[in-house]
Image (cartoon, rainbow, N blue to C red; front, side, top):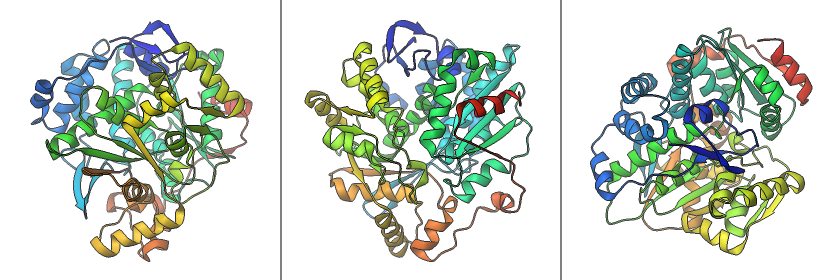
Length: 459
């Protein structure tokens, strides 16, 4: 399989290039040049596979020029051996909704599902290449911890994580900053997540800098993360096996990566009905999907910090798709967004979006009520992001089997849980040590030059 950039589809790339670059040189995102689609017969043959074997079947066509089947199978098994569930994820029932628990990995967030795989992909690559890599990643909370856990201690690779100072939960921060391995560097940026993300994008865009440090990235724009996340949509669909009913997924999202993975699964032939984009007050995606207005507002600080984002990077892939894979139009739109902060989606393009997506916005007060109601009625705790996904189904009111993606363990957000329920949600025993560990991170101005210098001095 070959890949192209959303902003220039005249040049194609291998998976290795796509994986290591993360972002195209022209600033675009990578997508397959052409995408295969499973037939009904092929989908039926995948139904009985366990999670690891299913992952191999879904991922292999995307990576076959990078890794053979046998090695891929070993890497997948290794990647998911640290998960607390044998089949990686779990599906439970709350009332009339299914909850897809994706937080059984080492850092208690859905990001582990893809990140563990990426860490082992890097190790596989570096074993055959006499090179060093420096990963630079922005995080709104969970990505950083998952990336660090996947990369720490690995040879010939450093990881630099930029998080917004005082805008992640204490547990999220400590999962990153208490790691002692010498190849891990944490930077607290004086700004919000979008500032962190813009710094990383600017470093990638500076080819002299990015090439000089052999820079790579694991943010949600990395195509390897998208294909890894697509697997759990297939697996969940097969678990439900509801031939006579529509299956809908509600996805808490800020950067449009996780929900795009569901869209990819649908394009590959999985008969998903609707994907619900569930947002908090930072509702640029809700406004885009419901009204056609993609316009960045000031970021609001909420009790669901991983979604406190106003620049949804992965949305560019959908823009490319609804504009008939026209790279020139996509490039023009993205330049306009950069210059003006907005994009008015045309009527026909918006109709294409609505064929696959619905959306909603849940505010902080509603989040607390949802957490309390679910706990009072079912004695199950939801984290604030999952609560947003849960509440979205009440707002869109859609028939069928409704699945909520539970993206993080509630213990990562003790302040919100305590406020909603009066319960002190404790960390699992194996992670309690981070509460008393010394933290190690540097506070840095939101300044590209200073961040670059900081990184250069440590490699």
